[in-house]
Image (tube, rainbow, N blue to C red; front, side, top):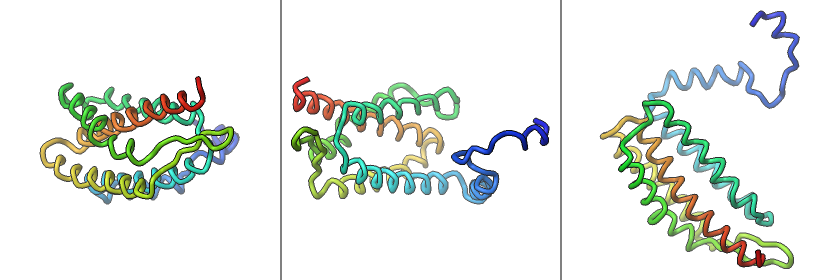
Length: 183
């Protein structure tokens, strides 16, 4: 694209600038993929905690329950790239491990309650401890599994595991929401 034409385009405030992208590019060149993956996991876990605090302050709706797993499902596009692929049996095991084992603490530490005309998420005091513990287990297991498979495949496996966990938790929330709303 010629620079004169590019300069005439309106500047969109929400798009990253070159000044912002350069440090990220330099960081990715300085850090090996394993360390960059660990850093991304820590930032992601912190983001989830902040999001959960904000989410707990507002009323629960059908959209707030269903949109996160639907949005997360777009991550399956990573499997279009050969580097992220692994055997189907591994995917089934990761999904079931997330849905059966890792979803259980989330199911036990959160529930929906009616508060007047709205439905709110009520979490026990140990909810955030559970979320932090799950993130720690993921990070520790990630470094162990990295010894046997590629970092990209490890990330994909943990994505499938997390999707199983989130999907089961959100499906249960949806049915609980429908029960409370009589819908």
